[in-house]
Length: 311
Image 1 (cartoon, rainbow, N blue to C red):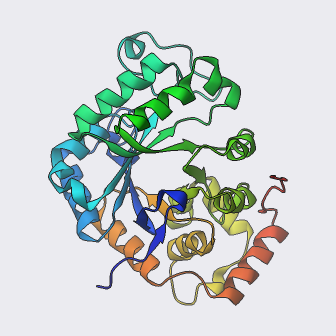
Image 2: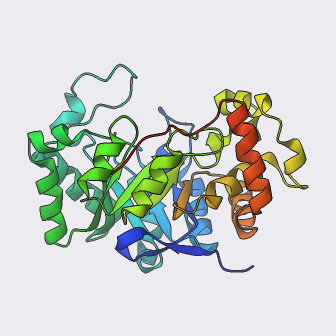
Image 3: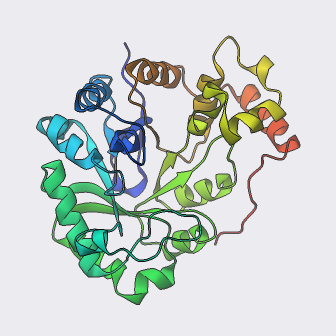
């Protein structure tokens, strides 16, 4: 099988495979479906065997970090490793602040929690450093400055425990995060079914930052035939543009056609799904005429980027 194509992750200079592996699927129960250690071992090594060289995880993903440490730390020189900052660690796990209105994990951006969390991640993943430490949950600049979180992460970078710093960013804070000019990378949600951040992906890339896409397979919607992404797919007729490929393949190829992105992290525990994703990426970006027509139809159906001016 041909090697997976690579793109440079912005100013980091890291050449990452266009398809990365997102480890959230490895979190297991109760927040996810039950995943055995054997399944985790198999899929992590299958991802590396397929040539994937970018692995993204988080403290929030249950036992994912331990599984990375247990099953692929002996292959550490084969992949770039990204995790998150601000996730609850230490005593905050047992005494967390209230969850937000969306019910998601709360995050605490104090130096104490960030340092403790990183040390925990390094220990669990059996490594001395991470290639990329990303602030989780898109904090505002005011939140980053309130307790010195940004200075803390920059200090961890100076210590060599972190090579590059990033932001898992979304609207409404993404614009100011890009404008700040300090982040080497942004992780941004995006797919044909979720185009709100499309212009900001371009803006981040033009500012010199690398862009990692999450949700680039539309969270499986068009493939699973369920969920909001599936509902959106049905509302926009793209069937004649598939050219014999699957809906899921089309979605993934649409994502990698964006010139501003470097890699898209796709999570799975199914080796067959992993192989399908690899084969889709090997087909490359969509032809320009198909891409243009797809965007025209998506916009006609209300799926369009949000126009935001970025300096």
